[in-house]
Image (cartoon, rainbow, N blue to C red; front, side, top):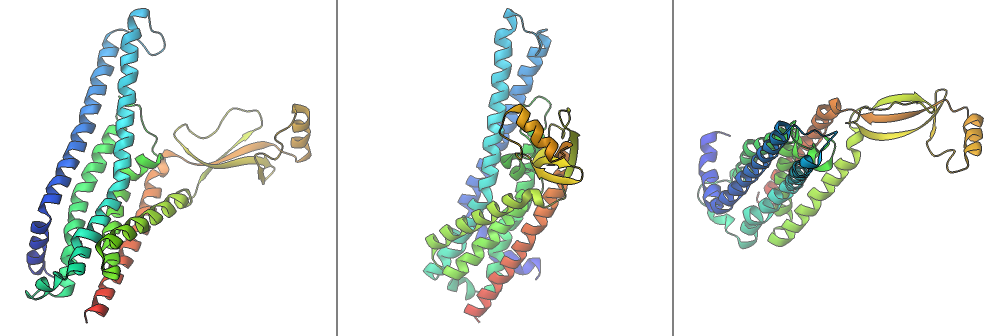
Amino acid sequence: MSTLALRGPARVVLRQHRRVLWITGALALAGVVLLTASLWWNARTADSFADSGCSYLYTSPRCGAAFDDLLSHQAWLRDVLRYAGAAMMVLPAAVGVFVAGPMIGRELESGTYRLAWSQSVSPARWLLAKLAVPAVIAVVAVPVLSAVYAWCRTSPDSDRVAWYDSTAYAATGTLPTASVLLAVALGALVALLVRRTLLAMSITAAAYGAVALALGAVRSSLWAVDTVVTPLNAAGGPPGDSLWVGGGLMAGGRRLPGDLCDPGPVPDTDRCLADHHVTGAYVDYHPASHFWPLQLVGTGIVLLLTAAAVALAFRVLRRRHA
């Protein structure tokens, strides 16, 4: 379908919801300003601390206030990043609820969609415009928000949030944009099925939340883990920025539960380890280099679900308004 064919319905959608779009844009801009200002403020404090001659390892009484100030600024930036990540986690659900309610559900419930269809706009073009407008905005705006968040999170002056933290993971990479697209598709599908504004909004929020929880539960299984094996009582293990998936004891080539010989007195524990021929311990983990494989596989799953939801939405529309 040509861009010219979509221009009329899309313009109507933009005019209908321009106030909400302006408010959303203002909130997004405020979030970007808050993140960058917090990072600048933290960096300025870190530079002042470095120029004072004080250090992290040793602080004289005159450095106490400067060190406390530095720690407070780092804590402030860490909290801002966590709240920003939480907002990015909620963003797809909010977009989906808006599509399900004010954008589509309200028109179906009130019957005002008939006016659009009587103006040489087919049901398919009407629905495509409803999907295209939030989808295009998401594809343009969400990557910018994710990039700003990632820039602030990886700044050398920040007290970094781990890459596998649920808020950081949901706010960076390709997954945030794909999640918004999925929420748009779910909102449209649910609205077409129930045709009631409030009910569609509630079901969309619940459906997206269930999908997000399911993907979060299987996230560590989307890519093969790395494994490190260390002898008993020996130092070693995964890198510090790794996501631990599981671990236990090693007996030759066999894996045993980590709590096989616990709890108990030391002699009994040693006897238990010897009886089971335990030679070391293992840890399954995802290093930081697995961020993009995990993200891309998760994004692919979300986009497949999005395509399925869009196809079902158009099928429902054709059946009900054939």
